[in-house]
Image (cartoon, rainbow, N blue to C red):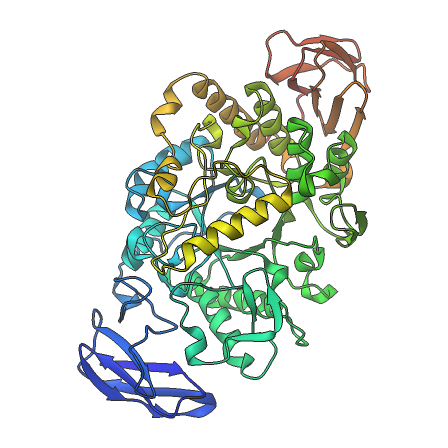
Length: 583
């Protein structure tokens, strides 16, 4: 027997169609309809009909084996045999995260195929993998941020069974799993939610259309739709943490903001599961209130992505100044990011023409996730260029060292560690004939607005665009990729070895720099990082005459002098004073 239930507050009649048979549902409280169907069980396909309309997939469908337009399928979450009873995720503060896209991470593009790469990731020193959204979206290929069946793991990746097996094996190998989820918009193709109820509101608009109804009539059930989804991933799929896409783009004027409610209920879930769960937010407005505890008037989210740190590193390495990059580019910005987490913490932004962000108070570095690149910063470029397509190998080494030396939680994007040559394009697989042209034009306008050239843009709909984005695992064994991979391995080992690199206390970092001569020095405990971005070899002063030794250097010709280090052009070194700071 299966109990079917759906929220359809405006419908006069609701039926569930199970394997061709139509069964009426009984109305209940607050617009819910339900019925027990003895003949239905796990594996049964079903759809809902509203007022004699066409069959529609369940808004809370757990499985869409035939895509966004097909019927839903009953799923028994209790049928999977988990083997991770003793698993407990490590603290986020000590994490090293690896962001990956299921479809392009392996040639097969499935959950199952990722399993073959887990030993490599573990040996590299990764503690958590972060999956781009895996909810059901239109077609077989896409980024996943246009999901419509947010309870159903994507059919082309391996569906519910495939995701559970991946998580189970990850835990067996000591790896946590973070899942990217999207609650600020849905769709467009296969977005049937508005047929069922007031999931959207015209009172607010977003870059993707009407806002999600978090505070108007009917919002009680819309909020439950979102929060229940988050709880499902953590409870039924044993996911360790969630990353919330565009968190502060969700407009909600309720007394209890939706993200505060979500964080509170996730915290309560820990009592039930007996496991640590965490939430990472992607902020658009540098609002650190997201990560303040609720007792201090915050939302209680554990950490947030730090775009400011990325932009500071990216601009000093590339010299780019178009779009929002115009607000960055000085070594002073890098120093401020290291000391403060954010650069724009209430300061005026030229690009946005407004004061941006909120002052950073009572926050640890562990509450920021930093990166040299991620899916957005690569995929939202015209040609999907990685940092390795923009700068020299030496500057890639400098960027990577800054991420791992900083007091934040470091994150890599798939293939970054060996300088993967494949781009990461924006790609789609819409079947609605009106969408491809609209997406192409929308993307062209956004790129022009940023200041990019838009000649010869890859077609998002072309399968070739997707195929070019797959990473080539054989590159790891060839130069210069093998040497860069060795560099990342050494950085990760240093991060693990020295307590001063993991303590998260931003206020203890000491920095000095020279904008004219383009050198920078940062000190954390007994470790010092120094780099030279000038085209000339130069001697960089250090603030102590204590004996030092080079732990790691990007160039063999680095030399130590009394109270100084001599660095060739585009090089970086990490020094140790004494030996009392090791783990």
